[in-house]
Image 1 (cartoon, rainbow, N blue to C red):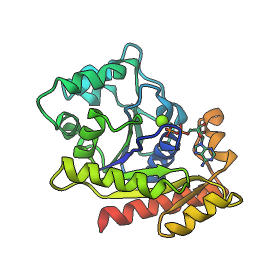
Image 2: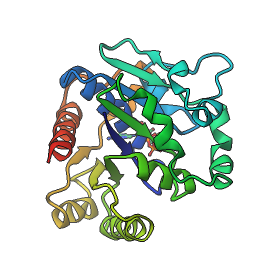
Image 3: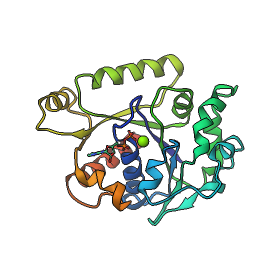
Image 4: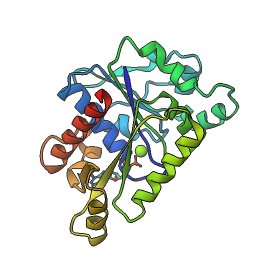
Length: 237
Ligand SMILES: Nc1ncnc2c1ncn2[C@@H]1O[C@H](COP(=O)(O)OP(=O)(O)O)[C@@H](O)[C@H]1O
Ligand SMILES: [Mg+2]
């Protein structure tokens, strides 16, 4: 089982849209047994795949008891299950701050090891205690960034943080998100990091919130498929 986290210190950069899209890619394109675990109490990525939390679900308690399997639900897509976010996750940060183990999240994932090949984590924004726990559970961290002269700097800051906190931090895969090549600053940022995958700005991605279906065709779908292929390459490198 490989764990792929979507992380950024910032909100609104495309984490949840990419978490839903990559989970769908893992399940349907690669035929992996896939779980999307939505850790952001806003619950966007589960919603985008048409799944809402079970009535009365308290993921925060199941995380503590390592009984997350009880909350897993099937999606409408083959091989793809979802652990939807519920409101209890708002208090997760406070729980983890008082916890002595840095690996509670990793431990909570352990019982799912035989059931899934790929777990995609959709994280809330912020370099918080939850983020540090997530870094310890992840095999790869996908970091979406809107193209900007600051993109490289933000990534270097994250790398420095990981080097401070961990002996062997997981690899990072930076991705340009919502790229608009008509904008001079976007073009310059893309040219500065030609090796970073690029997801274009596309209304098809926004429309996922209305259709609650992954993007099926067009440039954004092509870019998402290429990103998923890049993720699989990094995992097997
Ligand atoms: N490639 C894209 N093109 C156009 N809009 C996008 C794209 N990716 C995300 N969005 C939109 O931007 C907003 C924030 O995206 P979201 O995935 O929720 O980001 P985050 O999880 O980082 O807060 C949403 O309204 C989403 O539909
Ligand atoms: Mg989000």
